[in-house]
Image (cartoon, rainbow, N blue to C red; front, side, top):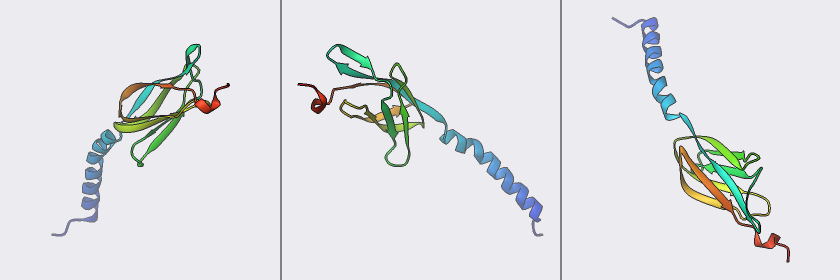
Length: 117
């Protein structure tokens, strides 16, 4: 006896629906968050608008900018990331093996070539 087309479609649909929760769990969103500051002669200041990029080894990357108090939150999947932080007038900072979910702080140093003599 041959299975009917409807029976095959019902079985295939059931199989796909049962796999959906597992696929969603693998793509669950979390975040890397933290603050970016810059060192100045007067101490540490929050860097508004700093670019923060999380890269998972070339497969995915996400870029955000800090808010008025230097805070950022990068939505991403669980895993290990390289986080790069840039701000005009400061050295670029690169942090390897940053875990998500997780928090971090980046303190940027002034770019020597931009200092007034």
